[in-house]
Image (tube, rainbow over all chains, first blue to last red; front, top):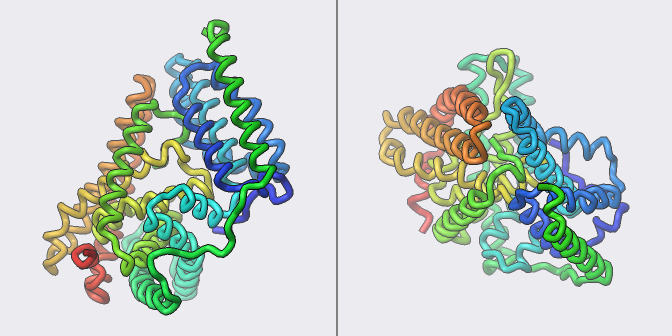
Length: 239
Length: 202
């Protein structure tokens, strides 16, 4: 697992406020997910493609993410095709990939900590937000610990195969991670208390909405309204 | 198994979010400031554990560990899995934002069921193996069954897919049962306090 790097660092999408991106993502993702009309779903396609171009990221990497995420979907689409329901297969494929592209463009261009800060601003329960912060903070630490233990297992001649010994080794490694986490959690809690933790993480970098954020929100809502009006008036063409 | 975005009908997506929100609410109420770091670390451990591919014949599978999460954390499995699955959606685009409620419910409810079914066995030394096996069987089969049922609601075309999903969960269930037993034995021997986490949460 490589360290997560936000996509499109040169694009304006990276600079946008995570709150705006989350609201726009939720609006479009839910609308597309709940839609069963081809016309409406197709109407949102130009927006998704435009975001992809704005991303100015490595297209190869983006398509690799799309392919990996589509594995389960392809399995469903093939089944729909075999049963002759081609339109359903196409609709599912289109819906899923549109949401994926919008989600890549708006979610993966934010640093996870920015997203969690946005959750805090949206007044999600404080404990849940802290859980997000701490989990993400420690994923890489724990992954490094896991890698170290695997390395020492390999040094002792461990070869993964379908055997009870292999499963036992993996189980002990996992159990060790749990035991180490138990002690680490105690240290973290004490360190938090030492720093005067009173149930809330204080943030020193308060994010302010910029003109760019308002402009992006306005354009997105405009596109959304236009597609909705267009699909309401022109649905007969696609039925 | 993560269900993709845009596949399930709206009412399932909404029901999934409502049930997950309710489960998360109960889970968060059972957590306090002291055990919050521990829950976060457990979430990180299960995130990492789900990336491990264990060999199975010529191929490999990745385990779910939702049973073990439930056994150790009880209702806190809901927020813990919600966070882990959200991070998987952000970092790898597995699953997604609208379907996150359904995916979390699929995984967490089996964990909670495993917690209530296996709790009596955990107290006894000889019951550890039963708890490990039962935990894996209940949690993994619930997750598989729910995904299969949800696929059928899209249309009759997906009955075959639903059957295949169920079949794919059987080897996972068997390996996970074996791994669970070893994990629980190790913990019972070295740090039995972890097994009493849920009881001390209030």
